[in-house]
Image (cartoon, rainbow over all chains, first blue to last red; front, side, top):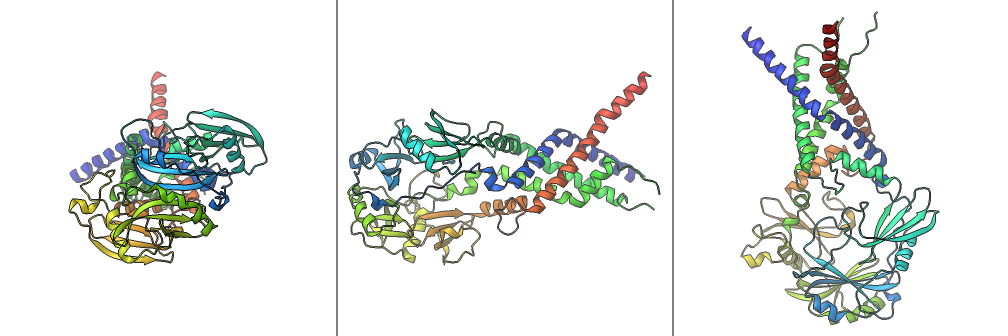
Length: 257
Length: 257
């Protein structure tokens, strides 16, 4: 008799705990289901907003007859670890990766989500000076990366953008007049095409924010909210299993005649 | 026979009994993945730069010759790499194929097993060094111990994308089961793996329910389980509403009459 009553007290405590955690978490669990369904339904391609994206083919180096190497500038950088040469918009570009000294003004590679101990500097292979992406170059790069039917609809300077949370800017935003209102972002320091965004992006962005409880939009997948909610959901599941086991034991899942 | 309307409690219990297992898996795997910090999972702390600073920028004058010799070349990178028991300036050439050339003579170089051993030990970061410090393992009298070295040419290894082949797999005898993958053509570090990464990858597989490639988020059973879990959550929410809103409100209404 005493055994039965203590067991029922324990189970009552368990049910109460399950309910209280559920009270805190139920909306988030529903959000996880809806956003998870959306991610799965859209797939990686659908989530990338690259409907009209065209990967620019790399240009062969032999198309340039001569290269002006920025020897002095490279030496001034100090501890250079690598120098890469490629062609961007028909102009040779030198990209030096180096260990920065303590003076301010060093740049990191755009589109790199993790912090790198290295800084990057870009030089024009025709003048030997620092690379500068002009608005005209940015427009050409954007048009070449675009496959849609829309026309060029303007270009503007941007210092940074929430649409590319890890990008520090500055650069250009090139708009196209199409059904998705596509915009293309170009990094000014490197001439790199960061990617495309369109009308679908705000919804996708909010799906990410809600799924990962990262309301800042900085794509911090290890924030305290999500860790706390994750641990609570484990506890919710464990108490749920124990309650289901109890109902099973009591014959709650046996069909009544 | 009398028709009884299904109650939220019954729906909640039965759905959880039949399909709740995935909810438990999602809770555990989700919590595990958000607790583990992404830079740690990527293994940034396991490796360090192995190339020395570029000291001879005059080699960049040879870019035109490289471009003429290899017309498909689209990108050339100058690095100072440990090959043949010493550091030398080399060009990593990307085009239709990847090549390694002596920066002085422009002769093709071949990376040997001995080179891979030496490079892997240089890429391997000693545990007591900060992840950003560009120092070598050997400099700290901490000789890393290679347990296994294997040349991979076929896409059989799930830890490495097929596009990186051919590559050397270098397993170290340490507590993290560190494995480095080095390009067989250039000796460049392709990626690094360790126990925590493998654990994370396993969690990811269970989370997205792609038990083969571990990359497809559009599996139909993933969508189906998301919908069923949504039903579990909604029925749970209805129970909470009954418990914390409807019943007290009804009791209050009754008492006031």
